[in-house]
Length: 118
Length: 114
Image 1 (cartoon, rainbow over the protein chains, first blue to last red):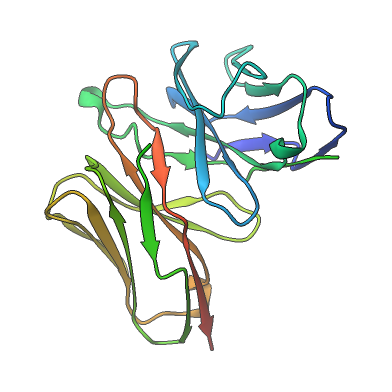
Image 2: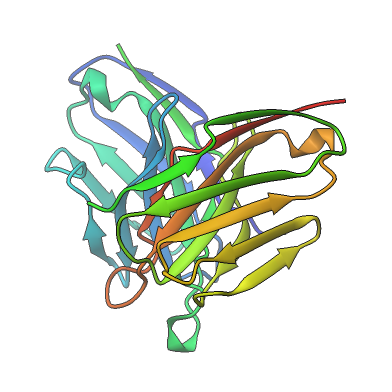
């Protein structure tokens, strides 16, 4: 069964450093997302991406964050200058979009990248 | 922003028991979804609900989309040890640019004792 893959599974970085989290969405999906989950808390939307541009972003997704689809398969999240409060599990997700818009909200999540900022 | 209140926060049950959990919102959602998260994994979609009043089953799981569109429940019948995990409700108002922007509840931690 096709799945969303994320690398690395764990990332430790120093405060102020740049990190890039990588994802390979399911190949025939059209919408891509990043969500995050701080330990013990709920999953929160960060950004959605469609047709090579950001569709929507949350308040969390400030100027320190950026997303890119550098080629036909990868989808990346970059944090320019990490802060302690960026420590969280970051999930990539993708969804199909059928005619009429049905299915777009059926997200398939990767296993996540645990980011620890020291 | 929209908030989802999920209850209970945690449940400890015996294998074979039925489980019920629910989710309420102060505002309307067009779609309700239920996800399960195992430790160290991402959420996995269990059930998606698209119409107010809709009742949908997936094996031992049954979920309903409330008539007011502000609530949903999930039932698990005859629980088994592999049902252990965190169950999240999520709401969506898909359309325009908002496909896939889900608002998640806080989760219900389910523990099943053999």
